[in-house]
Image (tube, rainbow, N blue to C red; front, side):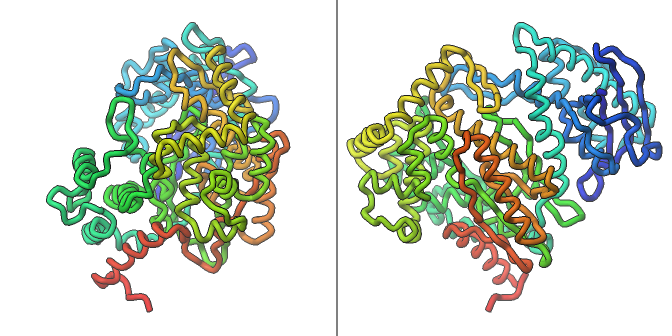
Length: 591
């Protein structure tokens, strides 16, 4: 059964279904009959079987499953998401070219069809019509044209299904069994989570938007270390400049900063975190992550008072989500706009040091496993490197947040092959000291280093590397080795999160949001919290061959409590925003 829906977007950002077209195919993918339904013709159940003898096929099938949800239809047993299948067969690591700026290719249905040499939509302006339908402007085309548009997507999806099952000289054939497994997440689970959304303090958010100029000015004054200079990094209206940042570094004698092979500054989050030991850098990073979120205000918020982000499942090379338009795409300080209803419990659970646990189990390094079981691998690393003689890990974590952050950077950097110069910058130590730390780590964890080198060599020989459950990355010539070093931890971490999320939804515990190695919940009672933790722990064991990946409660919000990130910079960011609103009289002053 290959199908597609067309729909308007309602005030809660959910589908208001217009029509559906479905092609019923036999086991040889030959057409048997066509089903066309328009608004008012939909029943309480689908007009076709959705049991174990039927396979439902769609492109970006989370959209179709969301339509199932709003129509009150039961999800099908089996679903084959063509989008997930295409992402898997087209996931290719190109040669490493640091000087080349690459534009990420789009992966729409039309793009997938073109990649397989399928032509269609010759007489349709697909993008414009899709936008008009979603915005409720379909009447200018008429009912017949909308149904024809919908059917053209189905017709092209059938062609794509046939091609993707066979493969061609450019793309391998889709692995049907794995796509069916992945589609449980990319279609069903994703539809449920996106529909649920994150509870949001709408009145407070609106106040910030109404006074955003004042908020942005104060944030710049508080967090831009160049504020007051003749050549500030940020303009008064919040515009960042790479050139002004580079000049500020030079004016302040900061000659050591992570750079690309091309010589340009690295300005991603990892580079900033590496340099937090420099005065003003952590605040500047926080400002950069926060100011665009407030200024652009591109947050999808429904009439239900919830932020409905897009998860974009499997849209990174490692299979991680590429989620967008949520407070988890900005600095942690703005997460305090999240407020749960008083009769619910807001809970944020995360897998404890997930990537290190995966590295330990994948490598079979017993010393790394023991360090993980000890409860704080970053404290263990600090002891190993001679940065502390405090054997009380809880006390050390409380008293040394900056050092713990650097140990986190060090541990994760070693996972993906950080070199001596970068490590020296991150630790603010001489390169000889950094080199000694790496050598000491190599002596303590020889199995990890051996496994990492062998894993990359095998991947290079096979021109392919996979996650524990088979998410593939094909490799061309001259790949970036650091990408390969990092792949197993990221890809298996993605598998763990997906498996947990799917099982949670199957158990009736639908998360509000998935964030890298954490899950945000809105639950009814503490029994559900324990159930969610156990489901996550079991998922961790299943991915790590029985090894226990811990699950920690990062946030426990009761009685309508506001989300509050515990990191000092996040607290300062939120306090600054609230202080501006108090000063201008938008909200009462706190006692």
